[in-house]
Length: 368
Image 1 (cartoon, helix red, strand yellow):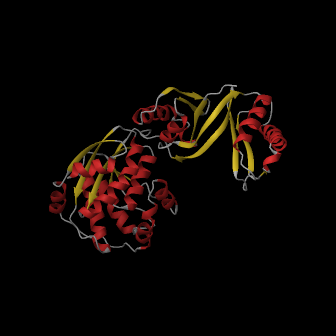
Image 2: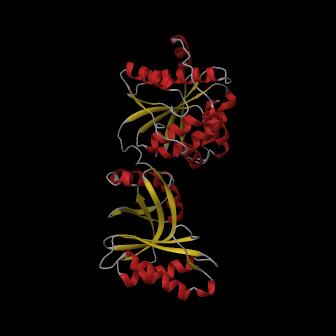
Image 3: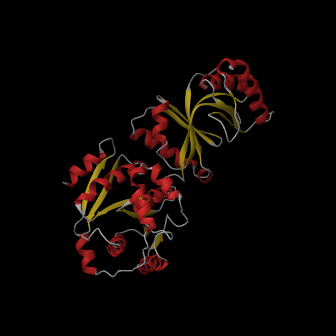
């Protein structure tokens, strides 16, 4: 048996025609995270990464979009007897006392049915691990998944399996866009913009310095997804009162106008029909089109999944703020002046940050 453990990357269904971009991003993120690897290559519908440290490599790769799931697995030949034997050995060793386990085999079978492998391996594990009190579970009720994926030539017996972030690979759209981070909702919108494959420029707007720490913490959860070792960020101080719905809508309107004055043809708007009135959204879209630019609304059609996205990027502590915003009735369309926009654009501070573990402190230090 080949004892090398590989990182196996499963692209989302939307990424299967964009695998070359996903491979490029995998190589980039491994270099950024200083993870040594020997090769990144395709094996039918999956990507196989031969990394020096599969555990740290899989953790780095799983920051990327375009991934359905990611595994650390052993590679063997696509042969019925060998597959059953290895599932019994490797899968059996993963079990703990009293575990309900499910043997799942997917992919391209060769002269046999995947179901036959599942039945044979399950039977063998029952026989060999009876002393553990482990027993088969069901698709809906199991403690441990013993997962195997088959390609035309190989089988991958998974030692570890984790869920990916979905979406499509960053820069797969090959279209530059700009988005602004100024609160929890806009952070999720920016996250979704990147998830949809746009080449994204991020600006950050704040009303008072007390907001900066929270905004930079949110930003720190987003920028690793940009697959760059050095990122230029731009901060703007928009001096508007932080209390009241009218002031919030004024804030959003001003930020939209500030993005419209940047040299980007596509503008990502942190607007959701579940939060903002249709009149407010229509007004924002009209202004974008009037500048002969194209609006992107990543949160259109996103419902309660925005809360799961918030958790995915580590915003658990901010869920209450997000719920409060969603529960608000945002109706007005406050006016603003060109003079205000010009004034706030002059507050620009550009920060170039090397992506790493000290991003938050480095960004705040550079702003000072």
